[in-house]
Length: 192
Image 1 (tube, rainbow, N blue to C red):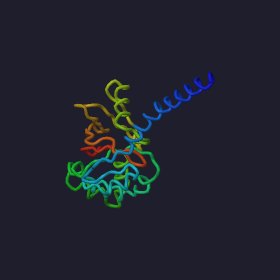
Image 2 (tube, helix red, strand yellow; image 1 turned 90 degrees about the vertical axis):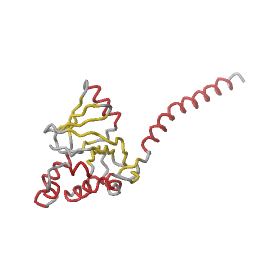
Image 3 (cartoon, rainbow, N blue to C red; image 1 turned 45 degrees about the vertical axis):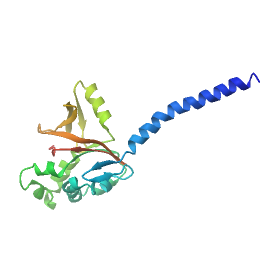
Image 4 (tube, rainbow, N blue to C red; image 1 turned 120 degrees about the vertical axis):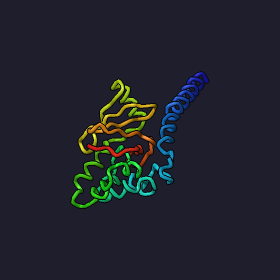
């Protein structure tokens, strides 16, 4: 019987330790599965970027641009990607006629450059971005899929992105998890 008590204690300790290890993983997993509403539509974390974006009434211009640029297969693929997704209102801030001009077949390269400037390889949630900003003493530089740089900083508790031309865009909805990455909704189209 003297062997049973230490064995039971070890088993109970192992069980408790396993619970301590898996509880944070379950919590993190729960955060990954949280459904966020964007543009009046639920964004399901088990669907990819395109499957979700097509349902957002706030991202119809972005979806049309992605289709015109031929990026649907890429953004439907495995990724992972971090997408800073401009709203229709963000596209409306561009000079009149800009979007209509960009979606023409002869401007596909320019459109692709602008869209891929909004994509960072890998999955970078708000906490990871905030940590990078803190590590960079107030700012961090992200390299986009397009190859350009985006500078991220905090302004009034929100993530602010500064593009290569000095234009600024604020994250209005962060951490919209997707099966192939994460979307952060932004209020301005950024230019490489």
